[in-house]
Image 1 (cartoon, rainbow, N blue to C red):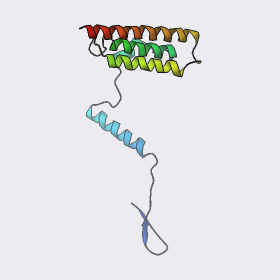
Image 2 (cartoon, rainbow, N blue to C red; image 1 turned 45 degrees about the vertical axis):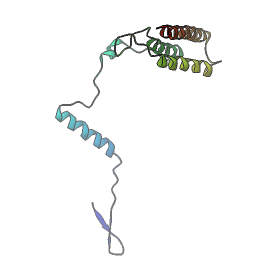
Image 3 (cartoon, helix red, strand yellow; image 1 turned 135 degrees about the vertical axis):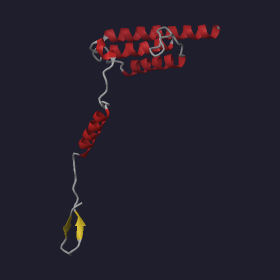
Image 4 (tube, rainbow, N blue to C red; image 1 turned 30 degrees about the vertical axis):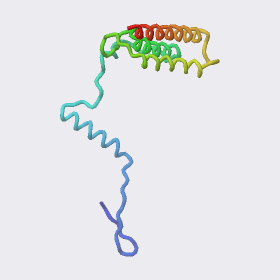
Amino acid sequence: MSTESSESGGTKPKLIIDEDWKSQVQAEKEALERQKGHSPEPQPQAAADAGPLPPATLAMLLTTLATQALVGLGQIPHPASGKAEIHLEEAKHFIDTLEMLESKTTGNRTPEEDRLLENLLHELRLGFVEMQAHLAAK
């Protein structure tokens, strides 16, 4: 650290502020990883080869949440296990989320979005009640 003289004859530290230290540390970290044979960049996954993602729309959000509810109802295989698993609490959570969106977006949906949401909620509620009855009968 360098010092500079003050008028009183003493010395005081001279502060050097490096505004770019974060990028320098990151560059050094990446260089070290490359030397070790590791790449710090994430590797592309096979899912990225599936094509472009659909546009972000309310309909896409609604169907995504409904799909998650169907997984919880055991009507669609769980992505991790590939098996149909019943998790009623998860299904209820996604149905409740759709109900919340229905409430919060009232007056801001297109007629097509209204019909989609109404149909999804009807089918999911029916499926939930049927699965509850099925499990209770066991």
